[in-house]
Length: 142
Image (cartoon, rainbow, N blue to C red; front, top):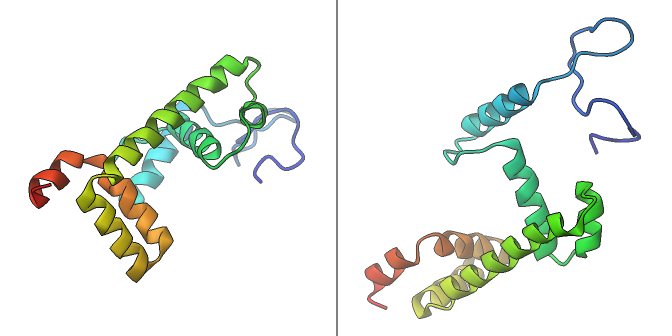
C-alpha cells in the first residue's frame, strides 16, 4: 500500500525538503531506530529490526500457501535460492510448532482455548506454547 504506483526512487522520503527536486530520504539507521521506537511503544521487548519484519512477512506468506515464486517476486529476489531460505525457515518453524502442540497437555489446552475463545486465540496460544515446551512438560508432568 505504501508503494502505490511508485516504480523507482526512495521508499521512505523524508518530510524535510531536500536540494532540488529530490526529497531527503531516511537512512537505514533511522528506519531501524523508528522500528525499535514503535516496538518499544507497543510494549514489544523482543529485538526488532526492519529485516526481521521482512523475514517474518515472507515466512508467513509461505506458511499460508503463497507460491514460492510469488514470494520471490514480492521480495524482489533475482535468485529463487535466496527465497528458499525463507521456505526452509518456514518448514522448520512448522515442524517445531507441530512438535510443541502434539504434547498431550498442549493439545488439550489448545482445544479448550479454541472452544472457549475461538480459533484465532487458539492459534496465538499454540504460538506461545511452541516457545517453551520444557516449561509446559515440567508443569503438567507430561
